[in-house]
Image 1 (spheres, rainbow, N blue to C red):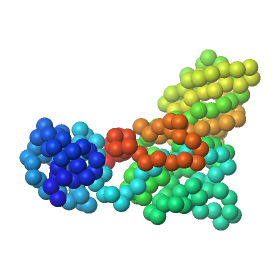
Image 2: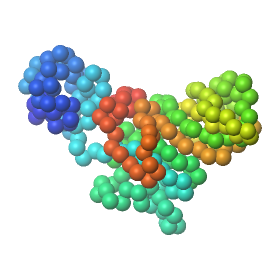
Image 3: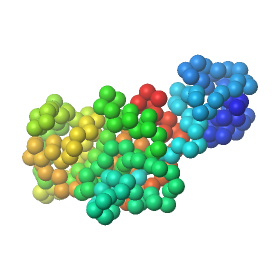
Length: 238
């Protein structure tokens, strides 16, 4: 297929807009900048980027952001009959899988896809995609806690450091804090905050890389927008 037609079908813009992007040198195919119109590409085999961001050309691929509610297990099916992610997506015909997991008593953002390459990279520690959490903890919060967390805390399975930490709100006896880290170990946020004396009462994951939970209601899902999917892929070298 002609490159401009492929881009238009992928939602980049009108055929004329895509032609202008190609002529301006903003489109690459397999990491080679293309400026000539009429170049033919294989959508199933070649990687196309616009302004450095990957454009997904395979319309069978599904990329969803899901707000996992409390009490739902991070599996597509559960032999014990507990509510699971698969129950929230049962109307979809595609065979999907979740990227990583959240504890049953943690709510918030989880990604669901049928793109195995993206899922594997997102879960591989070498890419270090940051994840953001809001935690209600027992307070008050000492002024040096952020520094301690950034310097590293020793847990039973090794040290952990946070990318950033900030106090969002404070009330008598409890506080709301934001923690950003790229660790993926089990219960890592809860264990980390408990270790420094501030057990978690409620925990919500609000962000994975460029993907935001936003105001999506628990149990609801949405397709990733093309720009955020492109940035997410860029974060893992795709």
